[in-house]
Image (cartoon, rainbow, N blue to C red; front, side, top):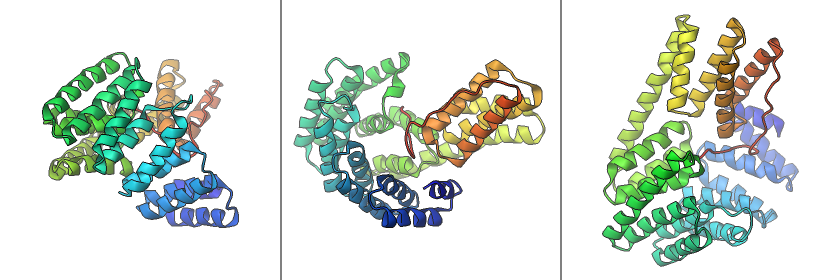
Length: 359
């Protein structure tokens, strides 16, 4: 497994896939190998094969809600909506009254039901969400978003607009309270979808621009953005927005990289930190981390600057702890800290292979 992970980190995807498959063949009860193989296959665009692997794992471990959610996620991306609805339904059924319950368990199921045209069923799940999360701001926000999408599908545009306007106000309040990170990116995309179908293209564009910039290397997230525009008949607008975000990211990154090549290390650090603060995607977070600790290695330890570097590294690890670039940045931090006799901040994995941030 360690070798398979290393191969994936070096982008040797065929070899990583082969090792993952051999692990399953030799150790069919080793569930983590199924998760790994599914992620590799999805990363190379083999969605059907990824779904099949996860479903096999779910049969071996049928009471694992996390794995059922993974089945639902990949089935939804694969447009196998009946399988996605079944998997999400199992997750909600098992987690509803437990400490593991999650707002996304309700919205995932409601979203798939809407995609299948089961509007009445989606409305029932949304009502369940309202009841179970009464008094919780994130829950109330999710209810408003899903109500807007339900009302639109029911041919009630005025009700849809009213609900999404309330959702935007509540989203802004969560942002001002510093709690917007508790809203998942999936739900944020639902909000953008609700904005698009009610004619609020400006707010939809702002939300999607942020998500696309922070996940521009994540093919799955970009595909979800494209799906929203496809559902609303605005594929061209979606492609144009994604292309614009891509150009802006390249320009932001190039400014810092070119400064470093000119020998202006301090200027490069300043520019790359600015980029990471504006767009905390994996690339910028890693680049800023490496620039900071390269500067500290040359100029001496600066506690304030080091804290910013550690924060960027923590954010990068939350996105993908196993990524080769993240591991390289962490190694650099450890080396520089040891050089100056500074205690290293411990890092723990938030997930075996992949972890996503919020919006």
